[in-house]
Structures are given as structure tokens and as C-alpha cells.
Length: 274
Length: 247
Image (cartoon, rainbow over all chains, first blue to last red; front, side):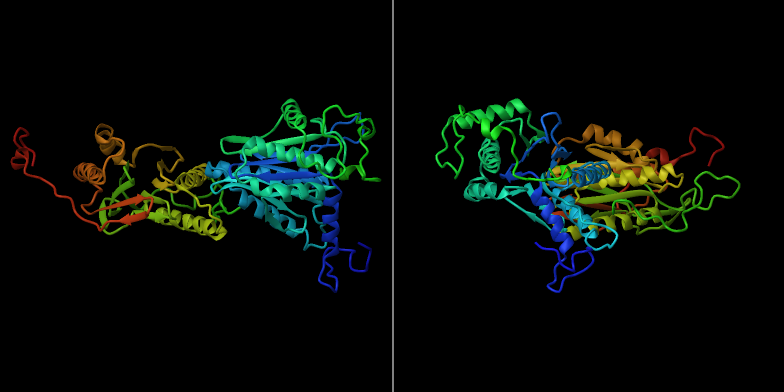
């Protein structure tokens, strides 16, 4: 995208009918590190890549529990994501208090989308620069939604957002038809493999990714590092039958020294965008 | 958020009177008496008489005190009739907004009961209660639910509930004779037994009762009818025997 005379504020239309500020906000999502979601009939799994800026600092938190039955993974401006998660938690708990029942995900997602839309139609505001993958359960089953800075939302069987998400999407597109009836563990395995796709050669370790699960009879929770590492080990020992392009790291005994320095391709990424 | 009932502009007086008369109603005018309800095999059965008393005068005799709410619930109310109608308005708006989502989710009886509890309790906290005792029963996805809320926000759920005098006269009967999966016919008989006792003993009862049922298929209100009563007790023939001087 290039600068043009219609992109200064969000309340200016371009002659082609575009709102450039909103589109720039969606670019911010693409710069964030990857987040993936996939669902079966009864479970939804969220996974994301967690890279710390440097070895001394902690990881940026990208998955938030919103309620026992809803969780969200974000990509983009994490500060915006944190604020929206707080809003979602507030809505859920208020609904729970009044009705003693969980807020249906579909309704939360619409409220979130309406909130985002407001920011696309006020001259003194800016759009939220974060994409949200909302995973949740309601009366009609397991759901995965993607909420975009434009105020649009879509329901997905599986989706990936953030940098190098196209690699993950390609993997998911190949496999998504099997997700509906997958077991919970298979779903997590697919999520881990999809995450690995976005790493472009780096070793997949539980220290650089976060996995969260919600399902029928299973409250939303983030899996702890050991469990994740065990799952990684379990499927990496079995050689992959369709090695994706440019991914040599199938066996556990890989040198990995080159990829290890954590070399993100996001050169010049501002700290707030990771 | 649409779950909070809107307050009228006139209700901005202080809740505790400090130097001025209180502007809102402190006591009920037109009241309904007990409501009795039980869970039965297919859902909920609820009974109430159709009387609206104006103090000690049995003034209105065709007041419907049981109304269906949404697809899954029945609301029965005793106490101030105008407050009951106000509550019906709040619930109407609640159900309307719920339907407007059009997303396959709907408020079940438990949610409506919870909402009513919040409304009643919040009004009580402002010293401006809705002068009612409400019974909320329903069935959703095979799960039967029956609950009660009073004007001070006391709420609970049980297999059989009643309001007002019904608590003292009907519930003991229900405790003895209600059982799980009672049939429709037995349920109606049981409710009639309770209503008959109430008719004999509650001076604000009228002999015109309305029974409604709610099942997975929906709500049905049966046409109102009267209970048969018996007054031929021997002690009624000569009531002053043993009490000389009375009449």
C-alpha cells in the first residue's frame, strides 16, 4: 500500500470507496506474530507463537481467558488486545451475574464487532489495531470467530492470523475437513503443526508457543509447557508423511543452532507490534 | 446493556425521606392472592385464582395472573397487579431483544428467573419495591425449572412453590403428596386440592381458578372454572352451639 491523499483520517472515504485507515489497521494485524484457531464439534483450540523481544524479557501474553467457556487469541497491537479482552470479560461477567448463565459467544462477538465499528466512524478515534480469534461454546456447539479491526466478524472452522499465517492457512486448508470429528488431542496436534508451519524452519518448542483449549465439559484453559512439550515430542518422533516445503526439522536431533537465535523476519518491528 | 430495566424520569426522588414526603407507593392497592405451581412429568403446572382485591373488597374477578413468557416460561404473580403488569412489560422487552438476536440462543426459565431476582432486589435496595411475589416456571431442552422471587429479592427454586398464603396452606400438602414425574391428571388434582384449601381459608380468594401448563411444546392456558365446595358440615348447622351469646 502506498500513501495517498485519502488516508489521513478514518472518516475520509477514498474515491474507490475504501477507508484507508481501517485497511492500515488490518495491516497491523498482519505484522503481529501468528495466532491460529481450529474447532471440532465439541472443542476449540487456540495456538500462538510467543516470541520474547530478547532473552531477558518475558513473553507477550497473547491468549486471554474471557470466561469458562470463552477465550481469545490476539495478533497485532497487544495493548489494544488487552483492552478488548477486558471489555469481553466485563460483558461476560455482567451477563453471568444477571442471568446466571454463560453469555453466548455469538452475541459477544457481535458486541465486539459493533465496538470496533464505532472506531471506524468517529473522527476523534482510531480503529483497534488487533485481530481477535474468539473461541467459545454455547447452546449450539463449539465456535471460532475472527474479529477484524474493520468491525467485521466471520465464523471459521479454522483460521490463522498474523505474520507468516499463510503457511499455517495452507496446512489448515488441507486438513480442515477432518476437524469436525477430530478428537481433542488430534485438534491440538493439528494446531501445533500449523504453528510449526509459521516458524519457517525453527524448532517447535513449548517455550515459544502457547496452546489453549475449550470444549464440552472442559473449561477454557491454557495448557502448561510440559504437556505441550510432550505432545510436540509425541508427533515429532513419528516422521511427517507430507513434509511441508522448506522444513527440515522433523526429527528431534536437529542441530538447530542457526534458527535458534530467534531471527524473526519482522525487521524493524516496533515492540508494541509483536 | 439491555438487561437493566429503564427507569422513569419521575423516579429520581431520594430513597430515604429527608425533609420531604415520599413520592411513590408504599403499599399495594389492587392485589392478587396466592399462586401455586408444581413440576410434573412433562413440565410445569401453575394455578392461581382470577381475583383482584381492592383491600377487603373482591373487586375484579377476571384478572389473569399467569402469563407465558417467551417460548419456555410461565410467570405467575401475586401482590400488586399494576406492578405485575409492569414486570410483564420489562419481560416483554427482554424477550423481544433476545429474539432480535435471531441466533439460535434463547433465554430459558433459569435466566428469566435470575433477571427477575436482580430487578426485584435492586428495587428493594432503593426502598421502592415492586410489590409482588413471582413464580417463574419453565422447560427448556427437557430440563424443568421452577423458581420463586419475592418483593425483597428472596429467591429459590424447588419442585413445588407457592406465594403468600399458599406457602402456609398449599406447600404442606405438596410436600406430602407431590412426587417426581407426577402425571398431568394427578398434578391437576393436587393443585385443585391446594386451591380448594386456599378458597376455604384465604379471605381474598375467589372461586374462579386458572390453571396453565408449560411443556417443551409451549404454554397452554386452560379456561377458568370454579371449584366445588362443601359447606354441609354439621357444626355449620348450629354454629352457636357451645358458644352462648354469639351469633
